[in-house]
Image (cartoon, rainbow, N blue to C red):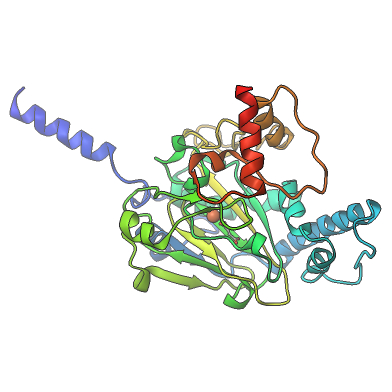
Length: 368
Ligand SMILES: O=C(O)CCC(=O)C(=O)O
Ligand SMILES: [Fe+2]
């Protein structure tokens, strides 16, 4: 092999291994509403996170608040009709009522978290044109919604909703480790340290590594990442890199699937409501254990593409996952507060609890 050929091969290799977590993609030629200023884009790729302020109007977010209030109301009715609670707490507002339900029926916050029904108001945020213009700056013009999203029901002083350090990739299957999945963490009130806002470990994405996580924290289904492991595998300097990130209502936090993050305890008297929504290129693997696909929002080839909500929303994830292991899908008690999922099997189980046991039971039925 001649020397020049070797040289050009080497160059091709370097180009194809650009780290997608730290490399800013070509920016859209056109200026569009919602786009981030260049310094925010740079911070997202350099430090693994950025805060976007005053993005949504209160009118836009009110639809989400109303949708959440409706979900809480229907949960209260269900608990009441089943005799699980004696009182509906109808006079309490959005930031109090779930806490009251939780006091009377422990685990109400988990039941609502589990329900995973996406209201129209959240769909509208997820494929909002200004939002997609911003996401285009991070992942390019082909944009899909990632199948993993959550409504966080962070009631005061509840260990079930205290999320320990993790990288989101630790919840996903390995086929997604090679590409960027930006997350928008959007609170429905001012998120502050007292009510359990987020912390991020900036620069934690730089190595491109997914660190070793373990499962599960306390009585929860959450994977955990030890600070020591963050230092060793991700090169985090806890003194310099760990940041508390308050977010004012109307703004949001952006981070990526390798950025370590956690939420603080909610020591306030309000429920700290938030949603987390994700996007990625539709040309990459979804990373959700072949349980559910994402939803295509934009295509560089077809400017008229419309999201297929019916298809996306019709997938019963639990049923698909259970069917893979059991011939019959188990009918679950609607007030069951156990959460299992394939991520539990990805990491060493260092703490057994009802969630890990439920996971092992489902997996065990394959071999019996
Ligand atoms: O809202 C929280 O407490 C945690 C959120 C989180 O882990 C995420 O958005 O990926
Ligand atoms: Fe997360």
